[in-house]
Image (cartoon, rainbow, N blue to C red; front, side):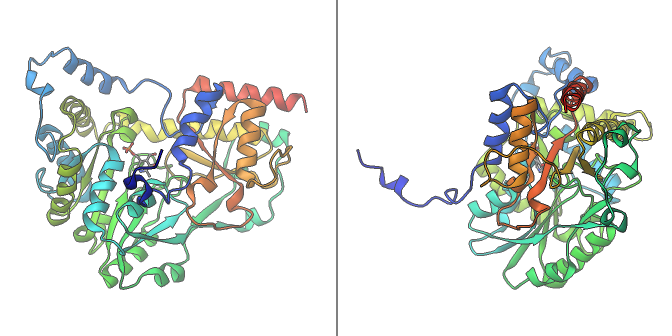
Amino acid sequence: MTTPKTLREDSPTDSHPISIWNYQDSTPADTDAINFTTGFPDFSPPKHVSSAFKSLVNNENNNSLIHQYTKQTGHPRLANIVAKLYGTELKRDLNPERNVLVTAGAVHGLFCCIFSLVRPGDEVIIFQPAFKGFSYIVNSCGGVPVYVKLNIVEDDKCKNDTPVTTSDANQKLNDRDLHTTRFEFDEEELKSKFSAKTKLIIVNTPHNPLAKVFTTDELSKISQLCTKHDVLCISDEVYERMVQEPLKHVSIASLPGMWERTLKICSAGKLLSVTGWKLGWCIGPDDLIRKAVTMHIASVHRIATPLQEAVAIALEGEYTGREDPNSYFNSLPREISTKVDQVCEIFLKLGLKPLKPEGSYYVVVNVSNFDFPVKDSSQTKDFQFANWLLNEMKIAVLPVTMFYDIEDRNEINESLVRICCFKRYETIDRARRIIEDWSDTK
Ligand SMILES: Cc1ncc(COP(=O)(O)O)c(C=O)c1O
Protein backbone atom coordinates (compact mmCIF):
# COMPACT_ATOMS: atom_id res chain seq x y z
CA MET A 1 0.00 0.00 0.00
CA THR A 2 1.45 3.39 -0.94
CA THR A 3 1.10 6.46 1.23
CA PRO A 4 -1.22 9.06 -0.33
CA LYS A 5 0.82 11.85 -1.91
CA THR A 6 -0.81 14.46 0.28
CA LEU A 7 0.48 12.65 3.36
CA ARG A 8 4.00 12.40 1.99
CA GLU A 9 4.27 16.17 1.72
CA ASP A 10 5.56 18.18 4.66
CA SER A 11 2.89 19.62 6.85
CA PRO A 12 3.62 22.67 9.01
CA THR A 13 2.78 20.58 12.07
CA ASP A 14 5.35 17.85 11.32
CA SER A 15 8.08 19.75 13.10
CA HIS A 16 6.24 19.82 16.42
CA PRO A 17 7.99 17.72 19.03
CA ILE A 18 6.17 15.35 21.41
CA SER A 19 3.09 17.15 22.59
CA ILE A 20 3.02 18.47 26.10
CA TRP A 21 -0.72 17.93 26.02
CA ASN A 22 -0.31 14.20 25.27
CA TYR A 23 1.92 13.93 28.30
CA GLN A 24 -0.50 15.79 30.55
CA ASP A 25 -3.55 13.96 29.30
CA SER A 26 -2.15 10.46 29.52
CA THR A 27 0.15 10.44 32.56
CA PRO A 28 -2.28 10.86 35.45
CA ALA A 29 -5.18 9.13 33.70
CA ASP A 30 -3.07 6.04 32.99
CA THR A 31 -1.85 5.75 36.53
CA ASP A 32 -4.69 7.05 38.67
CA ALA A 33 -2.13 9.43 40.17
CA ILE A 34 -2.71 12.70 41.99
CA ASN A 35 -2.76 15.09 39.08
CA PHE A 36 -0.69 18.20 39.74
CA THR A 37 0.12 18.51 36.02
CA THR A 38 -2.86 20.03 34.26
CA GLY A 39 -3.80 23.67 34.69
CA PHE A 40 -7.34 23.24 35.93
CA PRO A 41 -9.13 22.80 39.23
CA ASP A 42 -10.39 19.33 40.18
CA PHE A 43 -13.43 20.83 41.94
CA SER A 44 -16.83 22.19 40.87
CA PRO A 45 -17.10 25.65 39.30
CA PRO A 46 -18.11 28.56 41.55
CA LYS A 47 -21.80 28.50 42.41
CA HIS A 48 -22.74 31.69 40.55
CA VAL A 49 -21.21 30.26 37.36
CA SER A 50 -22.91 26.86 37.52
CA SER A 51 -26.25 28.45 38.55
CA ALA A 52 -26.08 30.75 35.52
CA PHE A 53 -25.49 27.73 33.28
CA LYS A 54 -28.25 25.71 34.96
CA SER A 55 -30.78 28.52 34.52
CA LEU A 56 -30.11 28.47 30.77
CA VAL A 57 -30.33 24.71 30.43
CA ASN A 58 -33.69 24.84 32.27
CA ASN A 59 -34.74 27.77 30.08
CA GLU A 60 -35.69 29.70 33.23
CA ASN A 61 -35.51 33.00 31.35
CA ASN A 62 -37.90 31.69 28.72
CA ASN A 63 -35.52 32.78 25.98
CA SER A 64 -35.16 29.89 23.57
CA LEU A 65 -32.93 31.99 21.26
CA ILE A 66 -30.17 31.46 23.81
CA HIS A 67 -29.79 28.03 22.22
CA GLN A 68 -29.38 29.34 18.66
CA TYR A 69 -26.55 31.03 16.71
CA THR A 70 -25.46 34.39 18.02
CA LYS A 71 -23.30 37.19 16.51
CA GLN A 72 -20.04 36.06 14.92
CA THR A 73 -17.83 38.41 16.87
CA GLY A 74 -19.48 37.57 20.17
CA HIS A 75 -22.81 37.22 21.91
CA PRO A 76 -23.90 40.84 22.61
CA ARG A 77 -24.54 40.29 26.33
CA LEU A 78 -21.02 38.89 26.78
CA ALA A 79 -19.27 41.42 24.52
CA ASN A 80 -21.03 44.24 26.42
CA ILE A 81 -19.93 43.15 29.86
CA VAL A 82 -16.39 42.33 28.65
CA ALA A 83 -16.14 45.86 27.20
CA LYS A 84 -17.42 47.36 30.45
CA LEU A 85 -15.20 45.29 32.74
CA TYR A 86 -11.97 45.72 30.78
CA GLY A 87 -12.78 49.30 29.78
CA THR A 88 -12.84 50.17 33.48
CA GLU A 89 -9.53 48.40 34.02
CA LEU A 90 -7.77 49.79 30.96
CA LYS A 91 -9.32 53.26 31.55
CA ARG A 92 -10.56 53.29 27.98
CA ASP A 93 -13.94 53.39 26.33
CA LEU A 94 -14.24 49.97 24.71
CA ASN A 95 -16.73 49.30 21.96
CA PRO A 96 -18.20 45.78 22.37
CA GLU A 97 -18.43 45.29 18.60
CA ARG A 98 -15.12 46.77 17.57
CA ASN A 99 -12.74 46.12 20.46
CA VAL A 100 -13.86 42.64 21.59
CA LEU A 101 -13.77 39.29 19.82
CA VAL A 102 -15.17 36.24 21.61
CA THR A 103 -13.21 33.06 20.88
CA ALA A 104 -13.23 29.33 21.68
CA GLY A 105 -10.85 29.79 24.59
CA ALA A 106 -7.59 31.71 24.75
CA VAL A 107 -5.84 29.29 22.41
CA HIS A 108 -8.34 30.06 19.68
CA GLY A 109 -7.82 33.77 20.41
CA LEU A 110 -4.08 33.26 19.96
CA PHE A 111 -4.75 31.33 16.74
CA CYS A 112 -6.98 34.07 15.29
CA CYS A 113 -4.57 36.86 16.20
CA ILE A 114 -1.32 35.16 15.17
CA PHE A 115 -2.72 33.73 11.92
CA SER A 116 -4.21 37.08 10.94
CA LEU A 117 -0.92 38.95 11.44
CA VAL A 118 2.00 36.63 10.70
CA ARG A 119 3.10 35.89 7.14
CA PRO A 120 5.64 33.15 6.25
CA GLY A 121 9.11 34.29 7.29
CA ASP A 122 7.90 36.87 9.81
CA GLU A 123 9.71 36.61 13.13
CA VAL A 124 7.88 36.35 16.43
CA ILE A 125 9.72 36.91 19.70
CA ILE A 126 8.76 34.47 22.47
CA PHE A 127 10.14 34.35 26.00
CA GLN A 128 11.33 30.85 26.77
CA PRO A 129 10.20 28.65 28.54
CA ALA A 130 6.72 29.26 27.21
CA PHE A 131 3.22 27.92 26.89
CA LYS A 132 3.54 25.57 23.91
CA GLY A 133 0.54 27.01 22.08
CA PHE A 134 2.60 30.06 21.09
CA SER A 135 5.21 28.27 18.98
CA TYR A 136 2.73 25.67 17.64
CA ILE A 137 0.64 28.45 16.15
CA VAL A 138 3.57 30.58 14.95
CA ASN A 139 5.16 27.56 13.22
CA SER A 140 1.85 26.50 11.71
CA CYS A 141 1.42 29.77 9.86
CA GLY A 142 5.03 29.82 8.64
CA GLY A 143 6.30 32.33 11.18
CA VAL A 144 9.71 31.97 12.78
CA PRO A 145 9.86 31.87 16.59
CA VAL A 146 12.82 33.82 17.99
CA TYR A 147 13.50 32.99 21.62
CA VAL A 148 14.56 35.18 24.52
CA LYS A 149 15.60 33.43 27.70
CA LEU A 150 13.97 33.92 31.06
CA ASN A 151 16.93 33.38 33.33
CA ILE A 152 16.74 32.46 36.97
CA VAL A 153 18.24 35.21 39.09
CA GLU A 154 18.99 34.36 42.68
CA ASP A 155 19.34 36.96 45.42
CA ASP A 156 22.21 36.87 47.92
CA LYS A 157 20.16 34.89 50.38
CA CYS A 158 19.74 32.12 47.84
CA LYS A 159 23.39 32.03 46.92
CA ASN A 160 24.17 30.99 50.51
CA ASP A 161 21.35 28.56 50.43
CA THR A 162 21.49 25.40 52.48
CA PRO A 163 19.22 22.44 51.90
CA VAL A 164 16.15 22.39 54.14
CA THR A 165 15.83 19.72 56.76
CA THR A 166 12.61 17.97 57.71
CA SER A 167 12.45 19.95 60.96
CA ASP A 168 12.66 23.23 58.97
CA ALA A 169 9.87 21.94 56.81
CA ASN A 170 7.58 21.50 59.80
CA GLN A 171 7.73 25.19 60.62
CA LYS A 172 5.10 27.46 59.21
CA LEU A 173 5.73 28.40 55.60
CA ASN A 174 7.10 31.86 55.13
CA ASP A 175 9.31 33.62 52.63
CA ARG A 176 12.40 32.27 54.35
CA ASP A 177 11.44 28.78 53.25
CA LEU A 178 11.21 29.59 49.58
CA HIS A 179 13.86 30.41 47.04
CA THR A 180 13.38 34.15 46.59
CA THR A 181 14.43 33.95 42.99
CA ARG A 182 13.05 35.76 39.99
CA PHE A 183 13.03 34.86 36.36
CA GLU A 184 14.27 37.80 34.31
CA PHE A 185 15.18 38.51 30.72
CA ASP A 186 18.40 40.18 29.75
CA GLU A 187 17.59 43.55 28.19
CA GLU A 188 20.54 43.39 25.80
CA GLU A 189 19.51 39.93 24.61
CA LEU A 190 15.96 41.15 24.05
CA LYS A 191 17.17 44.20 22.09
CA SER A 192 19.34 41.95 19.91
CA LYS A 193 16.33 39.87 18.86
CA PHE A 194 14.41 42.77 17.29
CA SER A 195 15.05 43.03 13.56
CA ALA A 196 13.37 44.25 10.38
CA LYS A 197 11.69 40.84 10.18
CA THR A 198 10.11 41.04 13.64
CA LYS A 199 6.34 41.21 13.38
CA LEU A 200 5.22 40.32 16.87
CA ILE A 201 6.29 39.75 20.42
CA ILE A 202 4.29 37.45 22.69
CA VAL A 203 4.18 38.36 26.38
CA ASN A 204 2.57 36.09 28.96
CA THR A 205 1.94 37.56 32.40
CA PRO A 206 1.34 35.96 34.89
CA HIS A 207 3.56 33.38 33.27
CA ASN A 208 3.04 29.71 32.60
CA PRO A 209 5.08 27.72 33.61
CA LEU A 210 7.30 29.99 35.73
CA ALA A 211 4.60 31.75 37.82
CA LYS A 212 6.38 35.04 37.05
CA VAL A 213 4.54 38.36 37.04
CA PHE A 214 6.16 40.88 34.69
CA THR A 215 6.82 44.18 36.44
CA THR A 216 5.83 47.57 35.00
CA ASP A 217 9.53 48.22 34.46
CA GLU A 218 9.97 45.00 32.44
CA LEU A 219 6.83 45.71 30.41
CA SER A 220 8.00 49.27 29.75
CA LYS A 221 11.30 47.97 28.35
CA ILE A 222 9.37 45.65 26.04
CA SER A 223 6.98 48.48 25.03
CA GLN A 224 9.82 50.84 24.18
CA LEU A 225 11.30 48.24 21.84
CA CYS A 226 7.89 47.57 20.27
CA THR A 227 7.31 51.23 19.53
CA LYS A 228 10.89 51.78 18.37
CA HIS A 229 10.78 48.86 15.91
CA ASP A 230 7.06 49.13 15.08
CA VAL A 231 6.35 45.64 16.39
CA LEU A 232 2.94 44.33 17.48
CA CYS A 233 2.31 42.61 20.78
CA ILE A 234 0.15 39.68 21.80
CA SER A 235 -0.36 39.72 25.52
CA ASP A 236 -1.59 36.43 26.98
CA GLU A 237 -3.12 37.39 30.31
CA VAL A 238 -5.19 34.29 31.07
CA TYR A 239 -3.98 34.26 34.71
CA GLU A 240 -4.57 38.03 35.20
CA ARG A 241 -6.69 37.53 38.35
CA MET A 242 -4.16 35.21 39.97
CA VAL A 243 -1.45 37.44 41.37
CA GLN A 244 0.15 36.98 44.78
CA GLU A 245 -0.10 40.05 47.02
CA PRO A 246 1.38 42.66 47.11
CA LEU A 247 2.17 42.32 43.40
CA LYS A 248 -0.20 43.78 40.85
CA HIS A 249 -1.10 42.64 37.36
CA VAL A 250 -0.25 45.17 34.66
CA SER A 251 -1.62 44.91 31.13
CA ILE A 252 1.02 45.97 28.62
CA ALA A 253 -1.83 47.56 26.60
CA SER A 254 -2.15 50.17 29.35
CA LEU A 255 1.41 51.48 28.79
CA PRO A 256 2.13 54.50 26.56
CA GLY A 257 1.91 53.73 22.84
CA MET A 258 0.86 50.11 23.39
CA TRP A 259 -2.94 50.07 23.06
CA GLU A 260 -2.68 50.63 19.29
CA ARG A 261 -0.34 47.65 18.85
CA THR A 262 -1.56 45.09 21.42
CA LEU A 263 -4.05 42.25 21.37
CA LYS A 264 -4.87 41.09 24.88
CA ILE A 265 -5.87 37.42 25.19
CA CYS A 266 -8.24 36.28 27.96
CA SER A 267 -9.79 33.00 29.04
CA ALA A 268 -13.16 32.55 30.76
CA GLY A 269 -12.00 29.01 31.52
CA LYS A 270 -9.15 30.30 33.70
CA LEU A 271 -11.04 33.33 35.05
CA LEU A 272 -14.08 31.39 36.24
CA SER A 273 -12.55 27.94 36.78
CA VAL A 274 -14.42 26.32 33.89
CA THR A 275 -11.56 25.40 31.54
CA GLY A 276 -13.73 22.78 29.80
CA TRP A 277 -16.01 25.52 28.51
CA LYS A 278 -13.23 26.69 26.16
CA LEU A 279 -14.39 30.27 25.99
CA GLY A 280 -12.28 33.40 25.85
CA TRP A 281 -11.91 36.77 24.20
CA CYS A 282 -9.40 39.11 22.61
CA ILE A 283 -9.38 42.82 23.35
CA GLY A 284 -7.67 45.34 21.13
CA PRO A 285 -7.92 48.26 18.74
CA ASP A 286 -10.49 48.13 15.96
CA ASP A 287 -8.06 47.46 13.08
CA LEU A 288 -6.29 44.53 14.78
CA ILE A 289 -9.53 42.98 16.02
CA ARG A 290 -10.98 43.25 12.50
CA LYS A 291 -8.08 41.19 11.16
CA ALA A 292 -8.55 38.54 13.86
CA VAL A 293 -12.27 38.38 13.03
CA THR A 294 -11.45 37.11 9.53
CA MET A 295 -9.58 34.13 11.00
CA HIS A 296 -12.37 33.61 13.51
CA ILE A 297 -14.94 33.39 10.74
CA ALA A 298 -12.67 31.08 8.74
CA SER A 299 -12.13 28.76 11.70
CA VAL A 300 -15.24 28.45 13.91
CA HIS A 301 -17.55 31.20 12.70
CA ARG A 302 -19.48 31.51 15.98
CA ILE A 303 -19.03 30.39 19.57
CA ALA A 304 -21.57 28.44 21.65
CA THR A 305 -24.33 30.85 22.68
CA PRO A 306 -25.43 29.33 26.03
CA LEU A 307 -21.85 29.31 27.33
CA GLN A 308 -21.43 32.97 26.34
CA GLU A 309 -24.69 33.89 28.06
CA ALA A 310 -23.70 32.01 31.25
CA VAL A 311 -20.27 33.66 31.35
CA ALA A 312 -21.92 37.05 30.72
CA ILE A 313 -24.23 36.55 33.71
CA ALA A 314 -21.29 35.56 35.91
CA LEU A 315 -19.20 38.55 34.76
CA GLU A 316 -22.09 40.95 35.35
CA GLY A 317 -22.15 39.69 38.94
CA GLU A 318 -18.39 40.25 39.22
CA TYR A 319 -18.73 43.75 37.79
CA THR A 320 -21.46 44.70 40.27
CA GLY A 321 -19.49 43.21 43.17
CA ARG A 322 -16.10 44.55 42.11
CA GLU A 323 -15.61 46.44 45.40
CA ASP A 324 -16.70 43.46 47.52
CA PRO A 325 -13.62 41.76 49.03
CA ASN A 326 -15.52 38.47 49.02
CA SER A 327 -16.50 38.52 45.35
CA TYR A 328 -15.16 35.55 43.40
CA PHE A 329 -12.54 37.62 41.57
CA ASN A 330 -11.37 39.33 44.76
CA SER A 331 -11.20 36.13 46.80
CA LEU A 332 -9.45 34.07 44.09
CA PRO A 333 -5.90 35.29 44.87
CA ARG A 334 -6.40 34.46 48.59
CA GLU A 335 -7.66 30.97 47.81
CA ILE A 336 -4.81 30.32 45.39
CA SER A 337 -2.26 31.69 47.84
CA THR A 338 -3.50 29.28 50.56
CA LYS A 339 -3.29 26.31 48.19
CA VAL A 340 0.10 27.37 46.85
CA ASP A 341 1.42 27.59 50.45
CA GLN A 342 0.07 24.13 51.27
CA VAL A 343 1.66 22.60 48.18
CA CYS A 344 4.96 24.35 48.93
CA GLU A 345 4.89 22.90 52.46
CA ILE A 346 4.49 19.41 51.04
CA PHE A 347 7.51 19.75 48.79
CA LEU A 348 9.50 21.31 51.62
CA LYS A 349 8.78 18.10 53.52
CA LEU A 350 10.48 16.21 50.72
CA GLY A 351 13.54 18.39 51.28
CA LEU A 352 12.99 20.59 48.24
CA LYS A 353 12.76 24.35 48.05
CA PRO A 354 9.98 25.69 45.86
CA LEU A 355 10.69 28.93 44.01
CA LYS A 356 8.61 31.79 45.31
CA PRO A 357 5.65 32.10 42.92
CA GLU A 358 4.37 35.54 41.90
CA GLY A 359 1.22 34.65 39.97
CA SER A 360 -0.87 32.01 38.16
CA TYR A 361 -1.67 28.83 40.09
CA TYR A 362 1.63 27.11 39.45
CA VAL A 363 4.68 26.60 41.59
CA VAL A 364 8.08 25.67 40.23
CA VAL A 365 10.38 23.46 42.29
CA ASN A 366 14.10 23.03 41.69
CA VAL A 367 15.07 19.37 42.10
CA SER A 368 18.75 19.72 41.14
CA ASN A 369 20.01 18.84 44.65
CA PHE A 370 17.53 16.07 45.29
CA ASP A 371 18.79 12.53 45.51
CA PHE A 372 16.67 9.74 44.09
CA PRO A 373 17.28 6.56 42.09
CA VAL A 374 17.59 7.36 38.39
CA LYS A 375 16.19 4.82 35.94
CA ASP A 376 17.04 6.51 32.66
CA SER A 377 20.21 8.59 32.73
CA SER A 378 19.59 9.88 29.20
CA GLN A 379 16.68 11.97 30.48
CA THR A 380 16.98 15.47 31.90
CA LYS A 381 16.73 15.70 35.69
CA ASP A 382 13.22 17.15 35.64
CA PHE A 383 11.92 14.13 33.67
CA GLN A 384 13.82 11.72 35.90
CA PHE A 385 12.28 13.33 38.99
CA ALA A 386 8.75 13.48 37.54
CA ASN A 387 8.94 9.80 36.57
CA TRP A 388 10.34 8.83 39.96
CA LEU A 389 7.64 10.79 41.84
CA LEU A 390 4.95 9.22 39.70
CA ASN A 391 6.24 5.66 40.16
CA GLU A 392 7.18 5.98 43.82
CA MET A 393 4.28 8.09 45.12
CA LYS A 394 1.71 8.32 42.34
CA ILE A 395 2.01 12.10 42.22
CA ALA A 396 2.21 13.63 38.74
CA VAL A 397 4.06 16.90 38.09
CA LEU A 398 5.30 18.44 34.83
CA PRO A 399 8.95 18.65 33.75
CA VAL A 400 9.64 22.28 32.75
CA THR A 401 11.93 21.30 29.84
CA MET A 402 8.67 20.43 28.04
CA PHE A 403 8.11 24.18 27.78
CA TYR A 404 11.33 24.72 25.81
CA ASP A 405 11.44 24.56 22.01
CA ILE A 406 15.16 25.00 21.69
CA GLU A 407 17.59 23.67 24.22
CA ASP A 408 18.78 26.06 26.87
CA ARG A 409 20.96 23.64 28.74
CA ASN A 410 22.01 24.43 32.25
CA GLU A 411 21.70 22.63 35.52
CA ILE A 412 18.79 24.67 36.81
CA ASN A 413 16.75 24.85 33.60
CA GLU A 414 16.82 21.08 33.38
CA SER A 415 15.86 20.57 37.00
CA LEU A 416 12.58 22.41 37.38
CA VAL A 417 9.16 20.83 37.70
CA ARG A 418 5.84 22.66 37.54
CA ILE A 419 3.07 21.88 39.98
CA CYS A 420 -0.51 23.07 39.52
CA CYS A 421 -1.74 23.93 43.03
CA PHE A 422 -5.36 24.77 42.18
CA LYS A 423 -6.72 21.45 43.38
CA ARG A 424 -9.17 20.36 46.11
CA TYR A 425 -7.89 20.68 49.68
CA GLU A 426 -8.44 16.90 49.96
CA THR A 427 -6.22 16.30 46.92
CA ILE A 428 -3.46 18.42 48.43
CA ASP A 429 -3.91 16.68 51.77
CA ARG A 430 -3.71 13.25 50.12
CA ALA A 431 -0.39 14.27 48.54
CA ARG A 432 0.82 15.53 51.93
CA ARG A 433 0.01 12.21 53.61
CA ILE A 434 1.75 10.20 50.88
CA ILE A 435 4.90 12.30 51.17
CA GLU A 436 4.84 12.24 54.98
CA ASP A 437 4.48 8.44 54.98
CA TRP A 438 7.33 8.15 52.49
CA SER A 439 9.54 10.51 54.55
CA ASP A 440 8.81 8.49 57.73
CA THR A 441 10.18 5.35 56.13
CA LYS A 442 13.45 7.07 55.18
C1 LIG B 1 -0.57 30.92 28.99
C2 LIG B 1 -1.78 30.17 28.55
N1 LIG B 1 -2.53 30.63 27.54
C3 LIG B 1 -3.64 29.99 27.13
C4 LIG B 1 -4.05 28.83 27.75
C5 LIG B 1 -5.28 28.13 27.26
O1 LIG B 1 -6.45 28.81 27.60
P1 LIG B 1 -7.86 28.29 27.03
O2 LIG B 1 -8.15 26.99 27.71
O3 LIG B 1 -8.83 29.36 27.39
O4 LIG B 1 -7.71 28.10 25.57
C6 LIG B 1 -3.30 28.29 28.79
C7 LIG B 1 -3.69 27.02 29.41
O5 LIG B 1 -3.04 26.42 30.23
C8 LIG B 1 -2.14 28.99 29.22
O6 LIG B 1 -1.39 28.53 30.22
